[in-house]
Length: 104
Image (cartoon, rainbow, N blue to C red; front, side):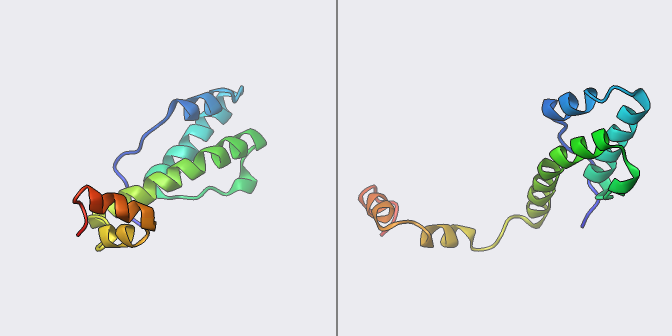
């Protein structure tokens, strides 16, 4: 796992976190999300309030997907992915590609 230098912060994250009424809790929620996004530091959920846990659990899947994409980008993608994709085409897809001259 690598440390990220940046991450995308979506409006939906802000909406979820800004609904935490207590200012100190809201700050802790932002810190929790940011530390997870940048440093992959999973929080101790038992030490957080229910509101923070709910917001974090809703945001976490997006952060995980972004991390996977960033890691794949660092590796330059997977070798042979075009061949794998071509192998997964249905017969009718292949016929259409052949008629367009894309596959011989």
